[in-house]
Amino acid sequence: MKKRIAVVMGGTTSEHDISLKSGNVVIKHLPSDIFDITAVIVSKSGWKAIHNAHEASIDLKTFSYIFDEKTYSFDAVFNAVHGAPGENGELQKVLENANIPYTGCTAEVSRLTYNKHQTLAFLAPHGIAMATNQLLHKDGNWDITELVEKIGLPCFVKANKAGSSYGVVKVHKVNDMEDAINNALLEDDQVLVERFLSGTEVSIGVIEYRGKVMVLPPTEIIANGDFFDYKAKYEGNSQEITPARLSDLQLKNLNAAAKKVFTILGARGFSRSDFIFIGDTPYFLELNSIPGLTEESLLPQQARHVGIELSDLFTDMISSCLKNNTFDA
Image (cartoon, rainbow, N blue to C red):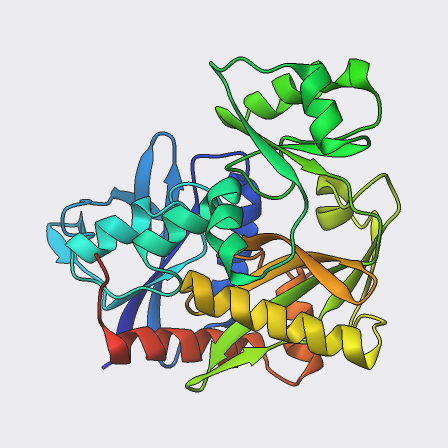
């Protein structure tokens, strides 16, 4: 009998539409002869299962739905939600309470990695190189002059809890700092300000595949604009070179750092981390616990480069969570 799988997508943040694309790629590549697949779309108006082209509300206590007086439940969930509630632990907690296994990080790890500043602070004692940074709060008092003296210019101002480069601005002038902070506050009530690092930018996927942690070939990012922003990521305004043009020592250091970050944070399933090279040292920027899965996204590119088809990766992830079926509070 086929396992019933919910592919959850959408979300309540600016990444909603990108997540829909990722979720549909997952559905496209999951073998329908093995799984009975249902799309579940999350939005600000509710969580809806798409059943025979009709919407049915999800009962969050049981993560099931009723259609034509019949109750439908799931054997497992594939989490393809970028942003909240898929990357901040909310969806995971719902599924843990309903005792339904799911792909990706636990609720606890998701809460941590969704918060850029907390992730940096968590990794700092473990010898992971990173840029000087400062966290600002919406209702806090900050002095822009002191901030610029500490961080330097240019610098990056970004929403602390957001993805796909929403709420990110590269600031070159002191007079532009306040507008950049206010822009980031449109996405989140906390703002992370980071020192600009000039070097080769790379993004690298780490996956659990067939019972082993595997580091994928990194992708070198050459943004046609000022940095790797939304247009560069999703509208082709960048060059993406896989594998990245790194020396043997740089690649060795990057692979070690990426695997260390994945392991220390307790990530699961797959992730994608971003780094900047200063000399031979990779400086960690952030980890995406639900990386983009669209046809143009980086992790799918990297997996294909080592001969791993998305259908095999996605199937393995579901099989793994069904096999383990354990939950961390």
